[in-house]
Image (cartoon, rainbow, N blue to C red):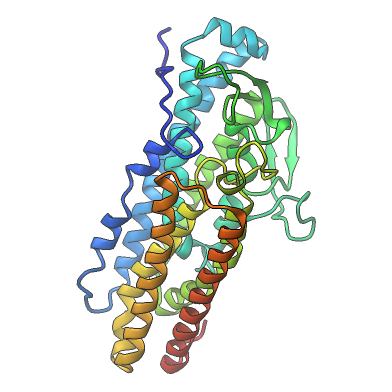
Length: 362
C-alpha cells in the first residue's frame, strides 16, 4: 500500500516543527471582523465559536485518521516499533510529521475559542477535559473524573486534559511512558524533541477521545443560546488568567530551552500563541457587546476598548518577537508576565464596572 503521508519534515517554528499550521492562521483576519461595531447581536458570538470549533474538528479528525493508520501499522508488526519503522521507512516519519501539523490545527482553533468555552459556564467542562484540567498525579482533588480506555484493555484514570496531558506528550515525546521508540525521524543526525514513535495504544485512544470530545463540544455549542450574561462572564473569568499563562510560558521550552525544561506540555507551540488566541477571542466578544456599555457610559466603553487594544497589542508584539527568533530569558518572561497581569487586572476592573453598571449577574 502506498504511504498515506509524505515523510518530508520541514523545520519551521522556534522549536523546529509544526510552525506552518500556526503561521497559516492569521489573527489579523479575526481582528478585521472588529472594525465596525454593529448593534448587539449575540448570534455573532455563537457564529465565531461555532466556526472555530468546526476548524478544530477538522484537525482532530485528521489526527484520528493518522493515529488509526499508525496503530494498524504497529499492530501488523506486533508492536515492534523498530520493525514497523524499517518496514515503512517513508510512511511512518510522514505520519508523525502530519500528526504534529494536525494537532497544531486542532489546538490553534481551540485556543481561539478558549476565552469563551472556558468562560461560559455551560461549556466550561470541555475546557477541563480538552485543554486545561490537571491529572490526578498533578492534583488528586481537582482532576476531572474520567477514564481513557486503550485498545489493549489498559485504562488511564483521571489522566488530565487531552491536549497537554495526553496527545502533545505522546506526539512530541515529553512523557517517557508514552514513548515506544526515540529515533531520528527527520534524518538530521540528531534525536531531538519530537523525534519519537508514540506507544500506539495510547496514541490511538488519545486521538479518538480528542475527536469525539470535540464533536461533543460542537453539539453543546449548537445547543447553547448565548446571553449577555454569558459574554460578560467569559470576560470577567478569562481576562485575569494572564498570570497563569505567562508563568507556564516562563517555564516552557520556548523560554528555558528544549534541553533544560522539565515541563511535559507547551512544547508544540508557544504559550504566547495560546494567550494571543484567548485575548483575541475575548476582544471579538467585547466588540459585539460593547454597545450595551456605550449606551450607558461612553467613556467607560472607550476605556475598555482601549484596554483590550493595549493587551492584544502587547501579547501580539511579544509573540511576533518570539516567532522572529528572539529567545526571552526567564527573567524577561517574568517581567513581561507581571506587565501582562497589571494590564489584565486593570482591564477586568473596567469590565467589572460595566457589569455593575448594567446590573448583570456573572
